[in-house]
Image (cartoon, rainbow, N blue to C red; front, side, top):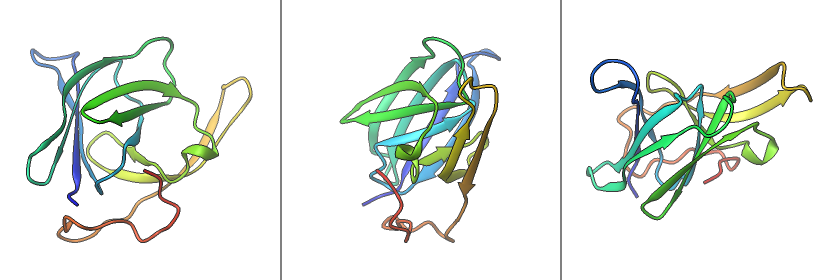
Length: 141
């Protein structure tokens, strides 16, 4: 197994858009959440050997802004949906602007969506070996 690198670019701003995040997860995550994703997003996923898992795809927001966006990989295809996380999303990686990745541990929001509160677990490993996976059984793929 190899780690996956998720390259996300906003297609707005500057001549060629702006990098939003270039984040690495353990391999096998077929779903990832993005906090505050750009409306016009380009996504590419590659492994440690630079083998393309998902070629560059343009994924634009449909509908209103929500604080979390779900990316779902299905073979070489990727899709986007805006979500209000619930406990079925706990354990998924959350890609943050700038390259950090954490695991969603809690999410709460009001019924009218006027506020939300969430918890993220951050960890790291020196050298990021290709076969590394989080030791916690509460990790989803």
